[in-house]
Length: 410
Image 1 (tube, one colour):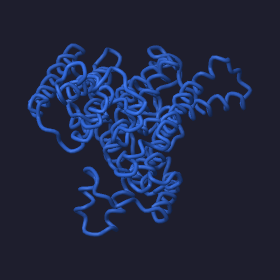
Image 2 (cartoon, rainbow, N blue to C red; image 1 turned 90 degrees about the vertical axis):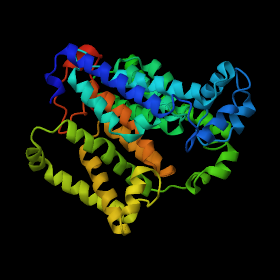
Image 3 (cartoon, rainbow, N blue to C red; image 1 turned 60 degrees about the vertical axis):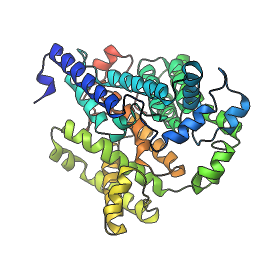
Image 4 (cartoon, rainbow, N blue to C red; image 1 turned 90 degrees about the horizontal axis):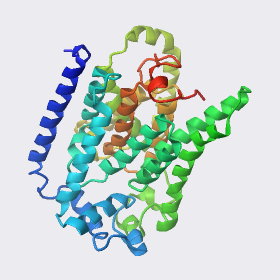
């Protein structure tokens, strides 16, 4: 059964029926959002209560709440408690609504996208953390919403709106700075390339890199407020050792993250969007791919992936009898990611910055969720670089008509 073969009205009906059934099932599974706290929900709720005493938080509230991530979600959950007094249910309902908004943005089968959007939505659902965190009092859904809004504004050339969305994304989770940092780098290199080629660059074009750069720098405001990466009491009690030292890094964490991308994005994309001629692609690129494989192997030997129990991938690794198999699993999945995103386009930079930031974090596969939202949105709108073998859309094509100017190759 191919979704693309359905009529447009059938696709819309399928979307509405399927999404209604899925989200009613989620609500029922969560005891209609009234169930007890699970895992991090209890800690997140305590942080939210810090901001539930007034409409506006005090400076001490912002500095002393007991959590490692930036406070915007806790401020929102606390405000809902201040206004409605419904406990965690109000915050859970907000996350469920935001999840539905993400689903509609990525998966609505418009005339331009049709069955492709539905397949991209299925790809998002194959990332197990999306539906699992929908309707729970976690911070990811708010952060993912701001990241998605930032990308929607970016592809429509609303760069200062995009800047604001990314500022709010960073205020929701620190590692969201990977997205504006990647866009700023990509656009800056593209502008520099225009100068190098002697092509005219209008003053307005500089906002394409300047706006995301400013959004990225907003992270420094939080560092200054906390005098560190997070409130001092949370850093002292909760953070891993790598976050307690300013200069400490765990390079192996980047390998873990690349493996998570391979498992939750690259493999689902291959299954849902089979490349037309994989053998030809192998024949055309084998030397380049062999060099990438050798380079990644050297990196893995020098900075081996971390063997940690966090998340679903950690549970799979725990089932393997010895560390050599764990390393082989992470290496193989990371290699898929490196081969898939070898071209230095926007997606390359987004993944690269996410991987770099993961050198400073716990190697938890849950952190791939915002990237999955970003990837499947960009693929649903046929953004260049989101077709597995090569971008097949020529300059001046569908996206040029519907979304604005095509991005420039740096």
